[in-house]
Image (cartoon, rainbow, N blue to C red; front, side):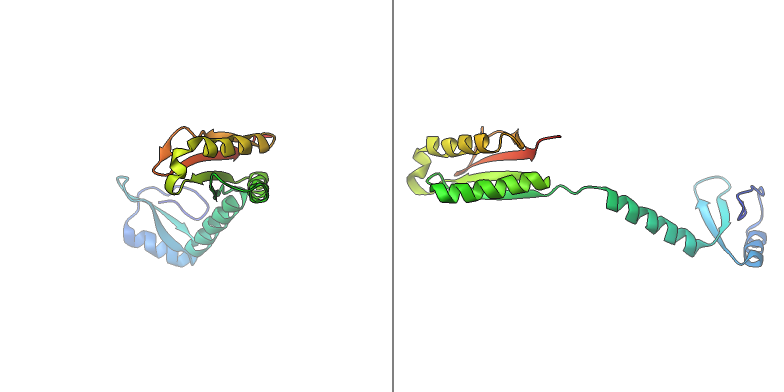
Length: 154
């Protein structure tokens, strides 16, 4: 058993440990149940739980969550639409999000894969200063080509 000051009191009967905790006005908490004999500690359990939650909140504030955004385009995209998609992509990368570009082919567009790859090449050149390719557009999934960008490490 360990008392509220952190001093080891040795092996004590359960009833005696409970009595000492009640005298101190605190709780008897089993710290290591797998040990032989089990280790118990006298402490204010509600304060302990509060401190643990506070530490978790602080740790959560410090972590950065990376979101994966997705932009879908077609191979026959017009110039203005391309510029809008490029602007969105740049904004996502500047914010620190990974971005997945999906080129979707419909009908006979699948026969002209080079148009989709040309659009992806154009996008690569458009964000080369702030983004780097994480997954290149090498494979085709059904009627789509997928490519993933991540923000450049500063």
